[in-house]
Image 1 (tube, rainbow, N blue to C red):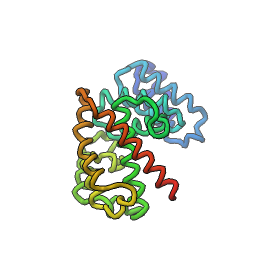
Image 2 (tube, rainbow, N blue to C red):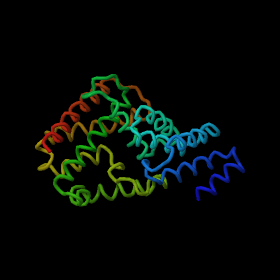
Image 3 (cartoon, one colour):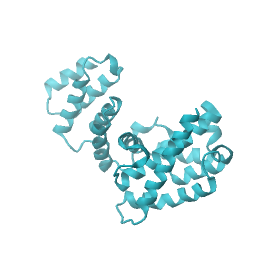
Image 4 (cartoon, rainbow, N blue to C red):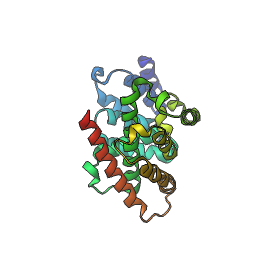
Length: 243
């Protein structure tokens, strides 16, 4: 397959997808076994140079940069991809992680409203997953998440991109779902948060999230997001230190 793709590039060097497919083929190998990661990076950049509106090579390049720990370089590719794929949950998840990696402890840096929301939602998801896994092990999704939420997440994933058909189902949850998961597991989460208070705050976040997504003006919302994000960062540190 690799040889065939290289031959296609020689025959048609202006087809951006040939570079993309060869890069994806090389990415199937373990990164430590790849002779030159730089070649993959160059192939994807070449694909983008030829046709800048393509989203697939941008996502692949973002994933490569992320796996290499080059989070600041990965972030712009995910942000650019979201312009064409605003509903892609896997791209959003990667972007959340990139923003979280670059942010200073407890949010002491100047994040945008959108980036602050990414950090907050990433922290909430990690909080939920960590405690459910701790209590239910490998059955955390079936035992810790209400059936209705499992079904809605599965339905959203089914409607997602083909590349996301095997993505983590928790990525397809929203703030309403997080609230329902916490309410259904109060005995687990109450050791770290005031569940009633935080379920109310998560309900407040849904319209704020929608407003930010559609670039509608906000006033106090960014302050709340940053405050909530800082709180959950501290909670996660508490959980990690305990374990």
